[in-house]
Amino acid sequence: MNANLWKIAVVALLAAVVGCDNKDAKTRPPQKGAQAGIMPKDLFVAQAPPDAADVGKIVADAKDGDQVIVLGRVAGRTEPFVPGRAAMVIADMSLPACNERPGDTCPAPWDLCCEPQDVLAAKTLLVEVADKEGMTIKADLKGAGGLKPLSQVIVTGTLKRSPDGKGVSVKAKSVYVKPAA
Image 1 (cartoon, rainbow, N blue to C red):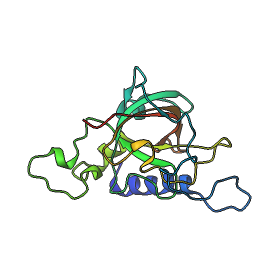
Image 2 (image 1 turned 135 degrees about the vertical axis):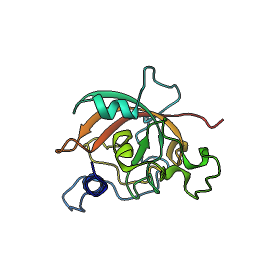
Image 3 (image 1 turned 180 degrees about the vertical axis):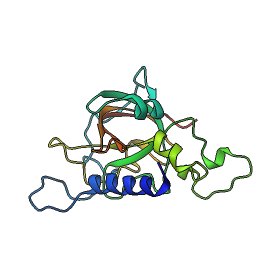
């Protein structure tokens, strides 16, 4: 897919996540994810789920509605957390962060700016945390459960493909954040 189509797909996917401020929608007011009480109590788990598949494998093979267990790290964009929403982009662990490349002094090593856009499209996906009504929670996910750029995570949830099949997201049921070494 050429770079312009990928950019359009990403914008469309993020627009679907962010949505509009429909007054009839059942959503919560924006709050910081690290503040108590906004995320589901059972979202962050202490044990890593077994049999996690890499982001690239999930993007390539999983079908709409599949229950998935996906391994990745918070990366793939300059700002991998969607502001004001419980959503983040995760990338395949095989994609090196800029700080893992000798001599690279990129100020945002999680943006994976050295990777071609077609590779990023094939090896990144959006993770969303929804409320009981299925709406993406209006709260920052950054900081919640210790999440930060480059955090390694295992997410369990339901896969959703965009109508054109190119955008991939997971509605998270649980998130395991690997402790920093």
